[in-house]
Length: 207
Image (tube, rainbow, N blue to C red; front, side, top):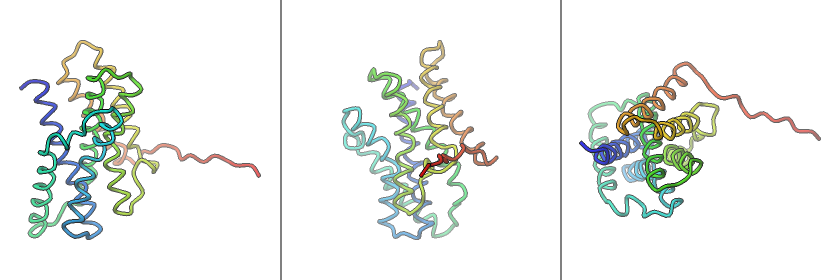
């Protein structure tokens, strides 16, 4: 399997993963089927859409409708699955961490391939990783994870930097993808499991 094929299948996998996180969030708010589909769709393609618009590229799901069909198929599968089995809502943490990791790396790879500078690569990588989850949380009435003290965008940011550094080292792209995705996923899950967080921004004001 070539590197481009690996990235393509990783992108499809990330789409399914983020769609499922959207569906689990929708289930927790007891939305109807259409509402759940909409949440799944914006969660899965939201970050990549803003990335492509910012980079002046054609929006990926407009050119390749497979992403829309994949979200639809995932929604129908989860819908019928939930009729017989309970949805593993706590599993949302792991799925969200994996989606964050996959989309961050894909965002970094796309920006690098287009020749953008390091700050733009890192920014668009984080945007690809977190914006879908931000939109999901806002639509279901939750405070987005990046606005809490939890280590979320930080994991994406550090993972993007790791990918950029590794891109200039003599290692294969496939190995670099595995290392970067693994780092973001493990760092995010570790932070939640052990209740690690960033200090709150508590600036004092003077009257």
